[in-house]
Amino acid sequence: MMTSRFLRAGRGCTLLGISAALIAGVSKRPSDEAPLGKVRFMTFNIRHDAANKPEDVPGWSLRAPLVLKTIRDEQVDVVGLQETFIWQAIWLRKQLGESKWADFGKERGGNQPESVSILYRQDRYDRIDGGHFWLSNVPDMMGTAWEGMSPPRMVTWVRLQREDTKASFYVYNTHFPSGSDENAPYFRFRGAELLAQRIAARSHPGDTFVILGDLNTTRGQPPVRYLRGLSDCSEPGLLGSMICGRYLENPPPFTTLDAFAVAHPGDNSGTHCSNRSSGDGSRIDFVLVWKPVPNAVYPKIDATGTRIVPPYSNAGCASDHRALVAEIEFP
Image (cartoon, rainbow, N blue to C red; front, side, top):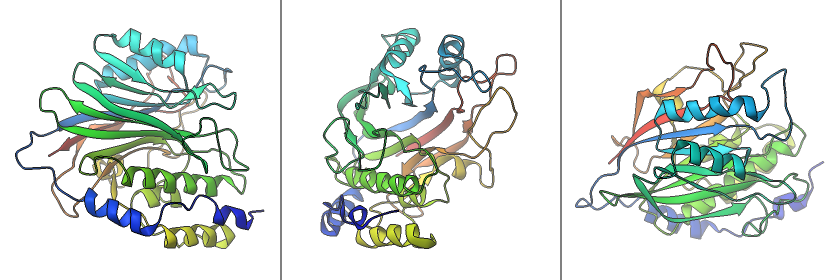
């Protein structure tokens, strides 16, 4: 059963601080600054190699070429990896070409070697900042988690700068808690809240940002609704009242677009993949992009370049998740 300490914990960010960050964040990029242009993003839970699930997907040694092929074939610029051992990210970077690609990540700690590493095209973008934080009351302490949440969960972020135009943007990559016990949905909402607070407080609030992640919930549930800038006071029961209380204290500081939903309205395709069935489950993987000005032309989501990558017909699933790709044009 939830206790009142959950309601009290982690409320260091005041409405005043968020409002100030929001006001600053709405500022437009200077008109004389060169554009960022089109960027292709991918979010991809590649599954670690701690154990095989032969009924769904085989071990890494058999899947690694498929993961590599997925990233290469989609010709992306930035990849948010989830459930990834550091050595897997390094292997992918080496196979993709060390002169072209770079990786940035850190183990989540707590005897958990997984990461949410980010791969990016270093021949196109320079990493000018980056870091990590954990979903906890002490987010900057490695391996920490809220009481009752296990294992630790984290966010890895980078600020990238386009080499030719010097336009810059942020990328945040995460993997929210899984499970269906009574605490998991609440922890996912807390994760969305902390992520939003950190984004709102970024050091360059005029830079656009993109959230990549396996959020372990669907777009209609409170965590994703919060990150999209929508109200979260419609959830029933005790969980709903707790989430509503947090929402009223810390309303969403920004609005984002769900890239796949914008590109393909009404498409209910999922991102699960299994070699034993053709079902794709629900879509729990997301590319969310900041929408600073309502009804503005930008950012533009390219429908042709935005898709859920299907399994290879002759080889099966690269992971138990399907990669999601979004092509986004910025001013």
